[in-house]
Length: 190
Image (cartoon, rainbow, N blue to C red; front, side):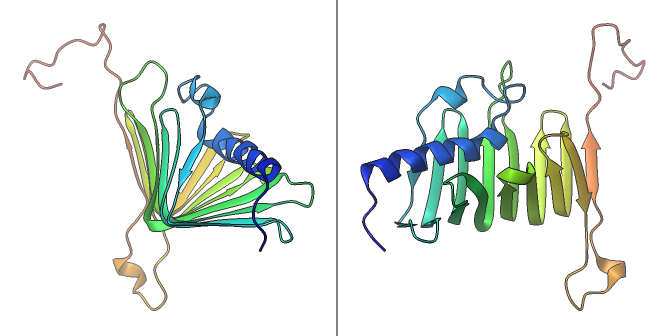
């Protein structure tokens, strides 16, 4: 493994920007996030130009504007053309949060493993997966998200050898939006 060059460091900052593109769609996150510098902190960082892999381990923290990702290990795989192929963040749990425009409530996600496939526009949250947005909660063993089509699918599967009767089911909670036109209930409840 050779010492990363300044050009390689710039390329990694660019690739991390691509990584964050799936996390920061303009309609959902602060529109200024993508213009902010990317900072990665970890106990160790290994950049392998020959195999197009970067590995960050030990209390990994990635920030860009309001975006914050954390985990125990982040692995970034690039194509032969130095384009981002796959990012894997692992943790107990791996986490993501971002402040959307016009909101003071963060969007959050967590799972044991978060996989992002840039070329397929696909994100997978695996094991104890949770996505929280204002007025919305989705939980499952696995959540698949197509970033291009803006479609999500959650599923729960029992661990090997577990009784299927005891498995947790997918859980989705949608909070009803309150409007000024909504009449108050006679019992005073919202």
